[in-house]
Length: 271
Image (cartoon, rainbow, N blue to C red):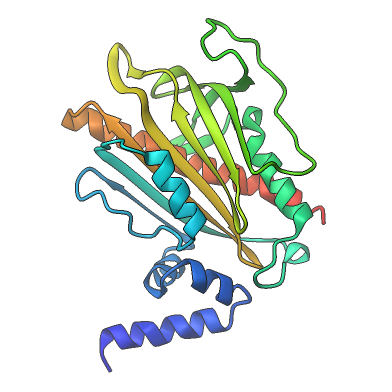
């Protein structure tokens, strides 16, 4: 038996005994499912060349959303992350079904921009946890010097499309304005974060306006949530600086996924 055939059979065994096997198998290849199982249900990569997507879920609406969001951006940094999060038993759903109340609750959590304030990530270089967003609030005056913060939006029925602006301060790029655009798709919830202001490191212009596009997607897979994040960035092409920027986007992906799963657990455990 070849190594490839053995891998294929092993993955079939793994997915056949899981309640989420059918929907997850529709979204990911067997190789990617195997990698998730081998790496604690979380995989990611940062690329500075050969910028191909390697584990994007096979969902037509998501792939179209990614294409529209990326547009003509000629990025030189790519960060891709995929996480499989187990749901509370009481919130399991049948294959190919997504409870409306659950989906609405999760959609509103993605709109809860203020709760990103204070989220943390692990800094491998410092060997400690660090705060990622020092400040995070919804605003409606993106061009104002000090726009007043607004309450996080909330919907009893998620719209198909929705956009908001947010002012966020992080440790790498400082205080900036971002635009978030949300899509309530048939099988998932997506949003893209785009920088309205240029991102700087100190006095160095690192990422120009509109040159950061970070897409976040959530799918219900019965007893799990499949979470995908991909970031495209056109950054100043200096080797040491590019590595720092890439690390920042990797840290952001991990921190936002951790933030969302924590919020999701609160919502789903209440059912």
